[in-house]
Image 1 (spheres, rainbow, N blue to C red):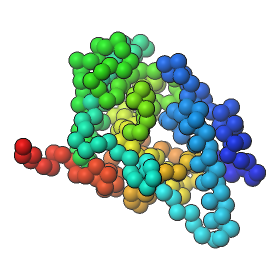
Image 2: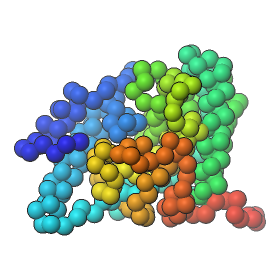
Image 3: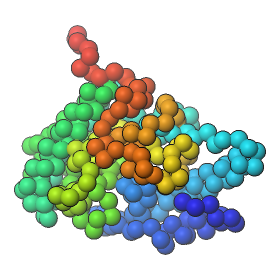
Image 4: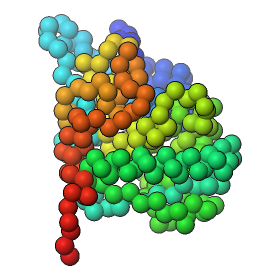
Length: 276
């Protein structure tokens, strides 16, 4: 986002509110920012405040001749200086809601099931988290069936995003990974499992990599408020957009990603033999 002299957080909020893509999910209006993040009105207001603080910090750094120290890499959202993560031992159970795949049909549902399974397995091999597909709940007609932490479902967002997810501290009723029908396109250009690896990175609490000051100018600015840097800038991180001539369309988990993720969640559980 370009610096705009004289723009306040309030005016930035109004500009974002008017200019950002609006998406309705289950009767609730959200504004799309950062490509794949959906914010309600109050979240958008706080986001604008964070962006304005970032603009001011950059202006002060330029005047002082000092580089801006970014707070994000493979980063976790932080509240009061503490990293936000899922509770130790919590199984991240999910259902893939078959009835929502109206455009993709059975083939779209099968693709979502397989891609999510492979993406969750990659994160389980990366750090100490455990996912579980409750396939018996896939046939539920409820958008939030009991017995799972989150759901995977189709939502026709008109191509506004390929997929969208949530963060650990989002309200329980927003714990959903949304898949737009563009996900099925044969010429998508991105690895589909990689797209879900990226979104599941958000589910684990990690922000975008290209937020850092080291990222190329062609990458979008984002609000860095409430984030903690977990390592050095990684242009090929699973959490990095394909922008500014860097990034990777495979969205693979890199060695630097593993180091950062293990700082938050520890080593993969498969590295241990548990004794009860």
